[in-house]
Image 1 (tube, helix red, strand yellow):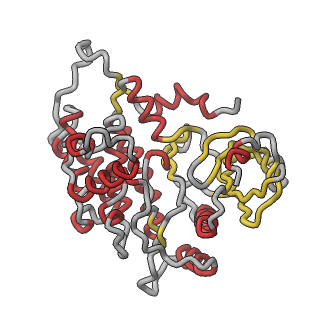
Image 2 (cartoon, helix red, strand yellow; image 1 turned 180 degrees about the vertical axis):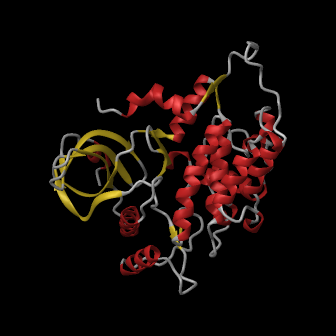
Length: 361
């Protein structure tokens, strides 16, 4: 398959509906374009499948079904999909048409914050985490575990806030009670019809955000793995991209091994299983002990020692920011210019500055 050819389809009309306006990015298994439905003039994102592996195609179809069936204010839903394939400029195109998000990824926000030495407002971080926790809670209620929560899979929309995307490697928990949710039943039936059984390969997910149970490939991976990944995402968001295991990684990694992807992957796996966490208030003196202990609990290696749900984690984080929680009072006074190199900025403020990045050229 000529992957590069799929990156040069700007201007083409897919499935007689979606005109590709702008190439956005290429991932391991797909290429993404900004598009418009020429019948309704509705903005969309079109994700085109790249892999020739039959299992990857089944996972792509599962992602399409989940995006169609799951409806939540902080989940990106699909408009349409075609898994048979349509011919476009001599290429066979299998695609998913998704809601357009007028914003950028949390990964891009973190990168910009790092470059500008910005300090993320903790209250704004709590809003973002609550929105993603709500989306995950909805999925969990329907027996669906995301398994790939990370900054690149969180988009921040100018109007709708944080949006969780990409259920490509989601796990559907086996039905355990007669009171299973209707949506889960529908998805479960659809998955079975595709010949895909609930995935027991726990090693999936971005290694930097992978839970210990994913590293160990445990068969009974449950909702707590998403909580762990969300906690790492939160830690990186408020530290401009520093992992809670980064200091441990620096002390453990052999000199000259930084360019060896396999070695680094094994080191990240080791970090999740035996690495030492760097307390958040060592990097952010304005963070209270209560806030750090909240995040630390969500990062417990034993799933049973984490919060009972991702919603409970979000609530605990919000409460830890209140004055009675023992928050440190080490922020500069309003007229204190001694820390002028640090910029206090919220997600909303940042998006106002960079909104044009999401507009068509």
